[in-house]
Length: 333
Image 1 (tube, helix red, strand yellow):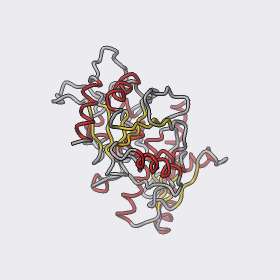
Image 2: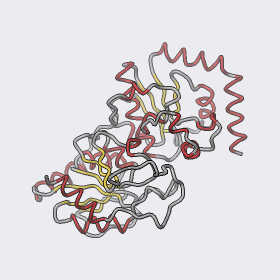
Image 3: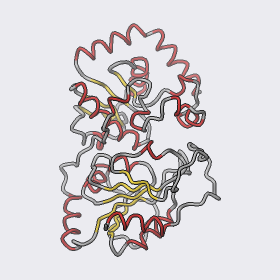
Image 4: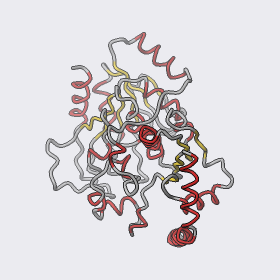
């Protein structure tokens, strides 16, 4: 079914190539970019805000974004308008229109791996395609076939806090009562649908809290149904995505597996974004200026095989005690 869908899109692209060129020419004259991505990967869609910022800085053109998460993308001052995909009853038709209209001004923020003969992003990277692309960071990797790395020079996320007061009032009260503590945002539940290799593990994060709770006031975020950690200062699971952006903006540090929290924190360089090391992806792939990878080996030798899909139960994770010491030494120098 998937191959049939891909073949239809490729056929339509060939048939409608003159229309494609015409549409992108009209959009260019209208002086805006249209960026889109469907699917459930929140972290990757958050990256579109940073991409919009990079485009706006270079071209000074308005940016329109189609997304499943407008409540987050709309927090970017570099995005002129967000359109919610899920609420559009004509999305199936629009989807094929966008696919055949991909060009200079209509941009799908997702690398077209199948066009190069790969089943998926992971299959492409496992086959050495990441090296062929000259090892771009994740925010460039999605459009590495269409945009030069120069546009991503000094890249940072493109989000700002919302105008809501909920998170502000919570953090204000905490800082008034605990002026000698740091405020840390933690999500101990890793995303397992893509790969389990990145997951440091709930129990390991609990041990880090046990060892740092006297100096760091931990606030758990994530889905309401996620397992709850002990010794938290606050449990804020199940809140909205714009609230999540606000609470990270107002904190001192975040701690999680590589993913959404790190991408949000990438918009706020004064926050230390701690990411637990894994052998899944190279450190430079996901590192913003404020990303601190903890628990990494002293020397990353060439024997490490990145982009592994299968979780190795025998893989030795860095002990929580060592990671807790890294965080405390860095936060309380």
